[in-house]
Amino acid sequence: MLNYDNKFFKPVSNSENGETSNETVFHYKQTGNIVTSEYSGGKIKYGHLIGLVDPNGTIEMRYHQVNDKGELMTGICISKPEILANGKIRLHENWQWTSGDQSKGQSIIEEQ
Image 1 (cartoon, helix red, strand yellow):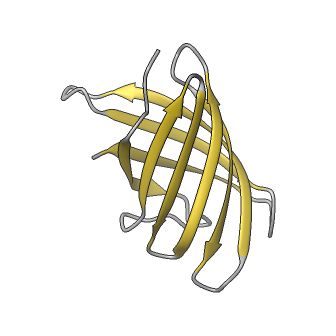
Image 2 (cartoon, one colour; image 1 turned 60 degrees about the vertical axis):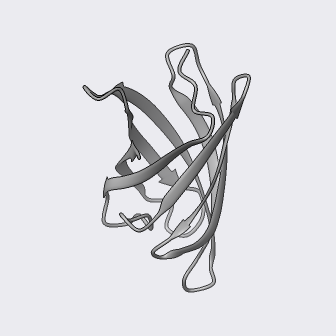
């Protein structure tokens, strides 16, 4: 099983309707199969996610964040890992807002 504990990730791409950018930094922690992360930067003042990781390293998560407009935004996401040639993790994410317009998107974040 992949271990996400104490790893830092930054987005490398995101859908137009997303709020994360290359200025956003995620700090992942893991205990057993529970993954959490605090994140901020760019349009996001503060965010938090919690998820469950399966034996393949895929994370099913829920997130909430406060953006630079002072809005509380929430969503769901499935993140599938890819191991890069340098051994770092790239996560391919399919997400959907559960607040606002409830639109869907895709993003990619990479371990720093």
